Image 1 (tube, one colour):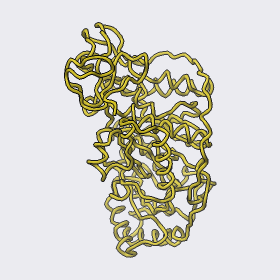
Image 2 (image 1 turned 45 degrees about the horizontal axis):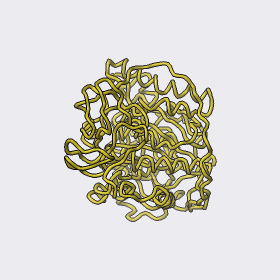
Image 3 (image 1 turned 90 degrees about the vertical axis):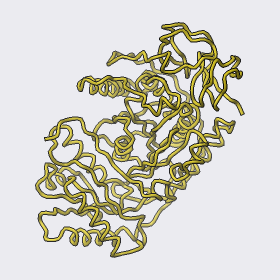
Image 4 (image 1 turned 30 degrees about the vertical axis):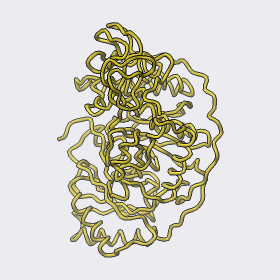
Length: 492
């Protein structure tokens, strides 16, 4: 097993694949100090002000002279990034991904030609005031029926919003909840309102667009004597329809897969993220769809994504995506580059460029075919970019609301979190997978020990197929299911 790696021949730093000791040899240099796994060490003299190169790209500048074999981290380098800027479209010639083997998945046919990979019953509150009632309706329904037959469970997704919001926040809350109501993983949904909230039920219904009326019910708590009893009756109606649904075989290209990372470490950009990038390329080769989000974690790698835009319009939308998020930070007088997190730094990530170049490995190598903003739904096959922050709960919620059936979530530090769609946790290192089997679905750490990307990709595709066919993810087994709605403005 190798103890270190140089990712690109142009790099001025190597990365420790295991904890290294002072005096050890790594990549042809003698280490001047202990280097923790995932952390960087200099391969040559780096003078004050010189760029530090990793992934073949600049990840920051030295703020002190750095000797070969010396630890390279927050004490001797810093970001070189700035705010909003102008960009140039330099379209790269991209070879199509090698044609992958088509697989089939067993899914549910839904309204409007959609497919779902789950057949669940949901209660979705329009406002946080009825969160307790939503939970009570689900509990009463479960108690009444015991073990449910023909459906994958009954759940509610509570949140604190839907009232005392104005402008963009109010519209975004309404829109995201409407997207959930029509999500194809749901076999029946009860929309529960209070009756006096900003997110009025009549407006919600009028602006919902086309939906499956057989699988959707609405209830205003203030309009009935016992909203729990009425809610259970409506769930009973939905259950009678959903429990007769059956899976049908479809090509894997029908899947829409979200790409997300959280609690990253120095191995994220070496093992799990490039593995997920290969899966994204595979999906593009078979006509499927993937979605990359976390816009702040594109900063520093954005030009690489822009150069992969399929055309000028997609490039311009990518520029809008990047500069718009920078302007959002500046509007609130916040630093654009207040990242990486303490956990990221402890894992070996030093600057936002370092983090972003590792994060965007999940996008693979193929064209950027679409860019989505609030309210946009997936239409372009291949790789898409989605507006939104890096926050795990918000990002996974956004991916689900854009239409993703499941999310591949890479992590080096670990997290138990799961969203309202199956959230497949992929560890960047094997230690995490062994310690936290109650969090992790797939171990990509073997890549650092010499396992091939090709063999790991086949294993990951196998897992995606199994999850699409109904195998529960760890977050589902432990009932870790949450949503978070993005908020940017004031609360009344």
